[in-house]
Image (cartoon, rainbow, N blue to C red; front, top):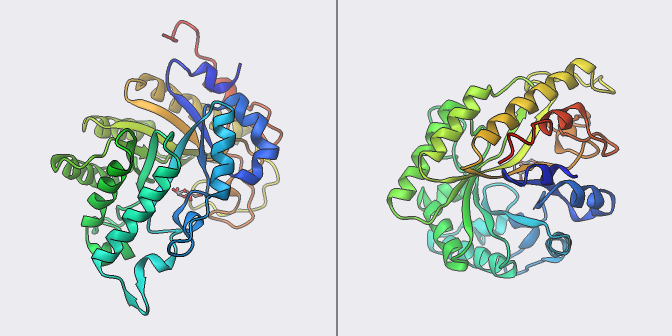
Length: 330
Ligand code: GLA
């Protein structure tokens, strides 16, 4: 029985993947996961590298694989300050007007969503809130040209493109109390204005030392109190604290793996207790053979953030998150 089957009474379990890794990871993914997120191939710059030049080849490959294997797909991501072609913000040597930017956003969102009408959940907007305490919105070309209004525009366009889709705001450091409160402020404002937003994507790029379970729980409570659905969208547990930049480890120590198992156990127990508001939990990778963390924040430093090792074998972490008894399963 795969990981996702054990969790089918709770929430969908997913993994991020790239089309060129399917040859290697495809069988493992189809066995243990129920959903796929495109690691990069659905990002704006990949799908529309130049104005009007849509390239769906990579995204189609991933989506076709998913549907052939009865996996769902999370759409990721329609609007982001990063990995978006510069053309989006330019008119010759000048910045575009807000009207032109809005028209381009609408075309991009409508075209991508029309291509994949079966995708039910979309990250409409990624990472619009600032990390700095003294700022609310992230400074980006979007906010520079259109202020806060680009946010509502994005959600309205997505709703217009597919009335049945679940529309998400997705962000990292989502459990940090200060950033959490800013995300709540943003989403509360949108809901009060009747903007169609249905859920929060908690990215979940965490490590062995933080955030605390209490912080994660408080974030889930805060987001759920707005009446929004929650999807954990990019979960990974780095073995290194953020400021730990050592790069001499060839294998994880047994202490690290034990701490990782303990953390995963606590995190999944918490998620299970919020199954009424959490619809899916997606890892930002499928197994330790590939993770973006092996290049971030230290280039070329191997990391081991998942439940499965380099050879797709279950780690102690896997055993802990699947140990819950049939009694707990409702
Ligand atoms: C963010 C984005 C993801 C991905 C990760 C790093 O969390 O939302 O798409 O780029 O960073 O891999």
